[in-house]
Image (tube, rainbow, N blue to C red; front, side, top):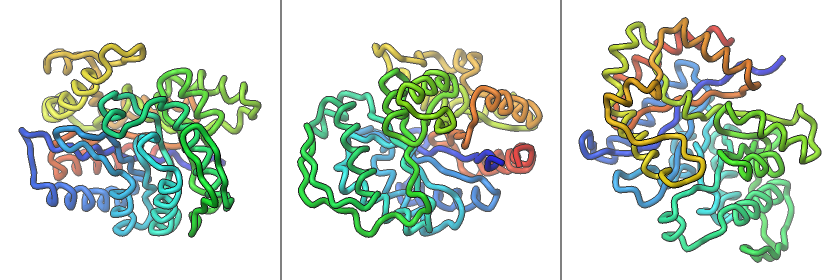
Length: 333
C-alpha cells in the first residue's frame, strides 16, 4: 500500500516593505510555526531559493533547513526548489548529508536549474542545464560512497569524497523540478522523481520511458501554480479578501520574472483581476478534498505543497492550517 499523501507548506522568507519585520523575528517565528505544523501532522516543508532580491527572498534553503532539523522530529525538509547551478557539488553533497544526519533522515533534495539571468550573472555562470547535470551526477556518486576523480566541462575533481554519508535509508531522494521538456528529461534521467505541476506528469512519464526506466519508477511531488496558493476556510470569500494582497505580491513578482520566456504561466494583473482570476484558491474543506482527489487521479502524488504567502501573519496562517489539518488531512489517511 502506498504511503499516505504528505501535505505541507512552502516558504520563501520574503520580507516585503509594507509588512516588514525584523529579520531575526521573522526567522524565529517561522521556525515556531513549522513546529506547530508538525504537531498538526503536516508532513513536509519546502524552502524556496532566489538570490539578490530586494525583499530578502531566501538565498540559503539548506542552512535554514538545518535550523528546522534541530527543532523538529518528523517533518521532511526540502528545498522548494533549490537552484542547482549555485552550488559546488561536493559542498552540496556534504551540506545535505549533514542536514540529513541532523534531522535523523528527513532531508530531501528538490532542485531545479533556475531561470533569472541576474542570478547567473551574480554567480558568474552560464549553461545552467549542463552544469546542473554535472552537479546531480557528482552528488549522487558521492552519496554512493565513491572517492571520485571527475573531469567534466564545469568541474574537475580529484579524490572527492562525502564523509559522513547521509543516514537516510536508501539515501536522500532527488526530485528535479522543471516546466519545459529539458527539465522533464533531467528529472527522468538523473532524478528519483519530478517536482512541479501535476499537469506535466504525462510529459515527465514519457521521458521516464525514453530513459529506459519502468513506469513504476516515476514519482511526483505537486508544486504547481495551480495548487500552491490554496486556502481552506469555512468562509472562502472572507479568506480570499484576507490573503489576496499577500499572494498577489508574490505572484506579480513571478509574472515579472517570467515575462518574455517561452514557458510563462503567469501575467501581471491588478489586485481585483487577481482575485477574480482563480489563481488564489479558497475553498471549503469538502471542496478541497474533492479537488485534491481529482489531482490524485491525474498523477500518483507523494506530497502536495501549498504556499505561505509573503508577509501574511503566521498566527492567522496557523488558524487556516488548523482547519486544513482537522478537516482535510484525515480524508487522505
